[in-house]
Length: 174
Image (cartoon, rainbow, N blue to C red; front, top):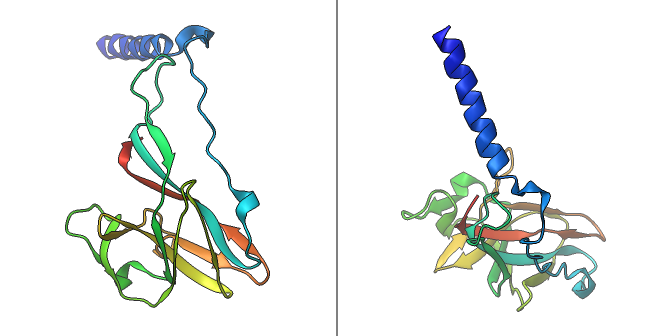
């Protein structure tokens, strides 16, 4: 019986925590988040990749509506490096990171573009698969991998544009 009592107390404790964090349905303390621009109207290429570069910072974990320490998401100007499809064995990881920063990339650089003040970038590209990196603190940054360990891949099809959102998240908590 003691095991059952402990289990029931643990469940009750978890429920109490959940109920205390629900906010009671009153949205009066919730501030509206300003939507970030999609920038689709800026696309002027007919084949290639486009998207936005956003810097995530601070606490993005779910919590009470009146939580004051919320994170921010900011459109940023960054250099966007587009390489031929690059796998983990094609890069040199930075000694200071957990797999998101690279000191060098050993595949062909296809093009380099810079995002604008709203985070928007675009690159006219031939059909193919590419890897996209951001230059951040003198290193290359990418935080997405596919099932084949291709780093931040994007595929460009004939006469189509592909949107690739780039979220720089190393300064955020989720």
